Image (cartoon, rainbow, N blue to C red; front, side, top):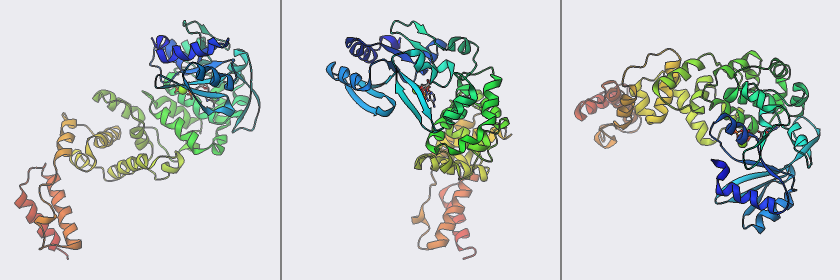
Length: 384
Ligand code: ATP
Ligand code: MG
């Protein structure tokens, strides 16, 4: 269906109008063959980047040079960006940055891609081109490196992590050579930028079920290089709890189960907001917050996340737990500082309010305001 997408059609028309070839490549072809949803559309072409820009502009599309040294131009068509990358062949590498030269042949281009199932191409009428045997591996649900696994990893150590990321999404069988190479070269990940690692880990953890990939990663000694101290053993239970509750997978929740160490922020280059979410979930975990506490303090979404990770750690979830969280999330404390002043002020006011909150939560949000004021005054004046 995406083959008839007008944005895609316009870009293909523009490139072909210049006498060049343009093919769908990578994730879009892989997912289409599997019948899975397509995230973004990537094109490969024999046209050089300047030529792609020129042809796009003459067709009234907007070319943006998003990765010009890798040969990538993003063509904005109908509001969607389509990445168009010139066929390339690898020249030499230092293990962090691939140095590339352009080529006219998809056979060259396929050789520099990471996994055979990521080196599938398709024409606009849906014919699949498979220069490195990716279809067989895709059907067998097996991630296999293009070429020698160790050699390919030495060119770019991020591929170790990409191996487990794609296994999490699409793998069922394990290519022993690939896994052994990842295990042998795991420490190369130490030299990879945290941004790139963060991108792959977010995607890995967002897979429907990342349990097996994480357990392979742990066994291969790879997890310890990415997230020291992470424990993936409860992941199958979390995935089970999510499925039982009909709740969509989310990487922040999976990450919160794996580790609650503050270092994740730096290790995965979390944004400020992402780090805040992890900190809130870590606090909830440390306090082993109940449904009422979680709902009241975290709001619905995070409270659901926390409660599912709690279930993965062996807590039974009562019937109607989501409704209880929703109720708690909406149950604002019916008294405020104004009700306690001037009897309480400063530190004792804070103490009083906290005591009232605790009583409010513990009493299932049913205590009347005068009773809460009594609790607050008592606690506030207590050991002043
Ligand atoms: P997704 O659906 O998650 O976007 P994808 O296959 O499109 O999956 P990307 O990371 O977007 O994955 O990369 C696009 C394509 O570029 C891959 O399919 C692969 O062919 C190639 N590629 C990306 N990164 C590398 C790498 N580090 N080494 C070799 N090839 C790579
Ligand atoms: Mg992609």
